[in-house]
Length: 422
Image 1 (tube, rainbow, N blue to C red):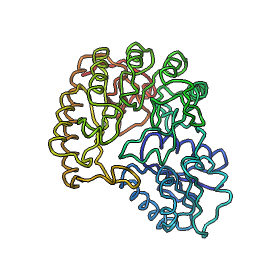
Image 2: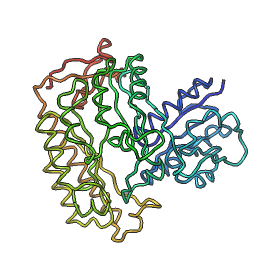
Image 3: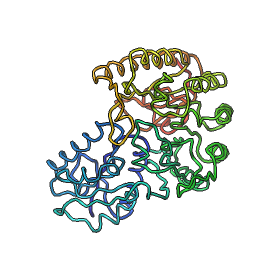
Image 4: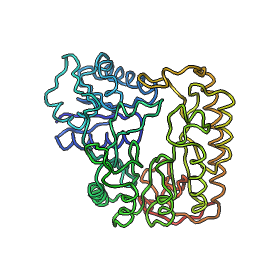
């Protein structure tokens, strides 16, 4: 029996796809191993949002070469679609699978042998069609279910449309089938994921015609028995409609937790980024959520050091975030990416200033989360506990996404427990 080991770089969507690739190869008779063990095949599912992800991919290949030089090395994911020739030239790489081919990995491995020059199986991103449903299944507690892929937006800093292709989705019927499958495994919580999740509804072939909507999906899932909790992983503010907010506020199964990308609190920078909203719309969405769900947790994506971000414009972002009733940030330091409009822009921000700004916003994020957690003290919340025994302790998340640690109790594993915040 051949063995295979996986490593994932990047977003939750990548993790759900890696999990699906793993199940595909296990069904073909492969034995799954830990990435740190010796295996016949190593698969690295890459990201290319930042320069670090590219470097990390190279480092991983070197590690495999030292540990197991005769093993096959397969690279897939966003970096593989964007720069297949560059990856093929890395010593030790045997196969590069682009966006259209990664789910045909079993077929490609049957014909692959060590020693030949790296084989590239890729196509132009415009030709990538079809939707491949994926979900992670590391433990029974929580799974990330991919319901949408690709993006039709053209943000000036982003390579994802070049790596993932046009927006396309599963059908509501297909999502429900996966949900019922997951319910059979004992999964208690599903996190809905996608590249542009709010754009759900464009058919599997990526046609512009909208066949269904994200709001319709949310409504159907709320009525589907078998899974207790749902989260919306990340949704653009212009696609987070008032009807979705209102529905979640009254929902039986959708958790009071949103993650809403902002990227900048300066309208000038938002314009340069080619974002499809301005900060006033963003503030309106936060206000409505908090009016209906004061206990709701809200996460924010923000980029620092975008070209032309002066100290004054960064201060605009800082003050805007400081005033917003949000709970935490994911802070990204802008990095130049080939084939993006931002790459050609003038007034680049020096790297040391980008890092300083990142630190400033991470500190603010920590303060926000501390404040949000303190506000919940004394409240009764429902916690879904996970299975891992960490030195006699276990962890879980409240419905509004506060991490809880408590002494390990076997009967609480994958159970939803009433919890008084203290």
